[in-house]
Length: 244
Image (cartoon, rainbow, N blue to C red; front, side, top):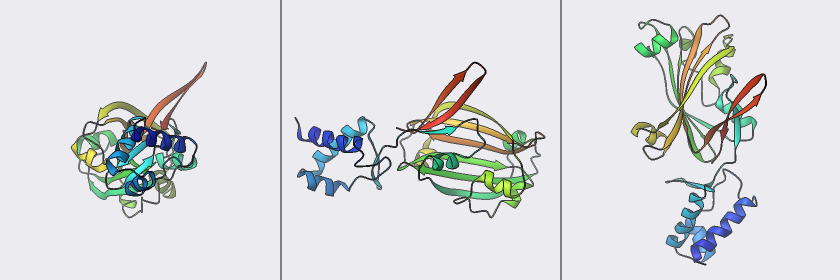
């Protein structure tokens, strides 16, 4: 057996045995190559084998991580991505790309059923879990609530939590999901190649009287998330799954 294949098999066995946990970083390449007594080129061949088997994910400049195991996100729920993933044991990091009160673009104003002269909060975030930047999300909060949320720390607080603390009650959401591919801008933000397959979710969240409070557009790496269904005679449950 070629040396790189033997190394790949050994690392795969350690990953499957739990010696390296899902989302955990593998030792640096130089350390691994020294421990196996091979060159960096040979080690990288082994890592490519593991990547092809979807056992690891490699992030340029950051390292090599064990691929995450599946997790569920309730598509029909009004909870945030972060809340659901954290409840299942994932460590989720939120980066705020931008946060500002702005004049509503025409398309956004139409979806919020607001005037184009109105201003709302535009919140752009990236969510990272399992060692990868997996979700890009842009949210618009309708007036007058957007102005009241402009100084919230959204790295530590979810948007729905912030709204509830303002006594804004949301009880329904309409969501559509479609396949797409990363463009140049989002590829840079998510550290992925252009045209990487993604799922795009567009969601409108409303209060009990039907007033639209938030619209969201989330771009989710197709390799990290999937949708599963659970059917019964009188209901259909949809949920997100996260995994390799």
